[in-house]
Image (cartoon, rainbow, N blue to C red; front, side, top):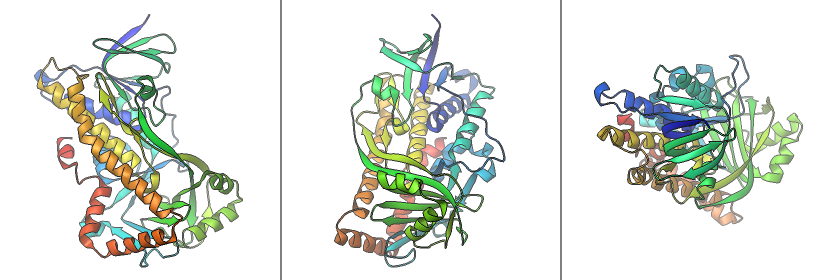
Length: 421
């Protein structure tokens, strides 16, 4: 039976898992050669990313990358190879309550110029980002990272000094540390029987792209409607990406509408903020849920990204929390491994340092998104009016607005981490 030994095996070759592998490899490679640990890193993914044509239409799956996330992607070498036409910077954000206007008393706005930053973030095509990370690792001259796509995992067992993953084809992967980066339906979390708390929103996010009568103005627009938030996010080709959260039955009904009828309803839902909208792409509904795993780490395992936590997409923070997880775990492991040649990457006490660094912020963000969702979709008209008034009050308080902007960018608590990367 074929067996491969690794020091760190990452299950999940999505953006979060690939970033973790890339950063860990880079942090160790940049150390002095005579003190450099010889680490074997594996990334297990059922299939490698599909090739993408340079002239392909903008994919429906886009992610909002905050400045903190961009810094991590730059450190991983992914941002530099991302085609410019596959990302769009946004400099402003307007958020308002239905019944108000984007610039009325029930709204709040953020502008990069207020903090002296060039932008608030970028809207990026997920598949191009993942392909860039995968290609960079596959073509890297450093032999420390092995990409494994032969077969999916079928079984997991613990040994005294390792985790052993059995593949469908029968091969065994033995590793001193197993990292679950395999998404919200994590196989690693299930195999380890890690308890988690969560719920289904009974909602879906309807995603598509539209063109507009007026330009998006490099602005992210989001309106809180009684059934859920609807966002228009700027794309590089001048169109806007739509994320319309609503009850699952409504999402199915809207997905089946004729293009003209759908565009008309969306125009009304967004308060005509960009004028008349026109459907330009297919529509796809994604079920929404929230989940948080009680333990991120233990002896010889760690969870990152959606395997550890899943949040409502209303602020686009899910991908950014995953990137911060990946960077924190890579930096924690690198510091430990560089301290001594006999360091064990699966040491539970060391892995706990990563969990302490990330769990509190992830819980805080999850609670904030849950609170916003509940308030703005409440059946209480008084509560929703108070929430809308609160947006207007905060909009007139620069100090609090600045704190919220820092929270959204992800840089406020992670400056030391980015300095080390």
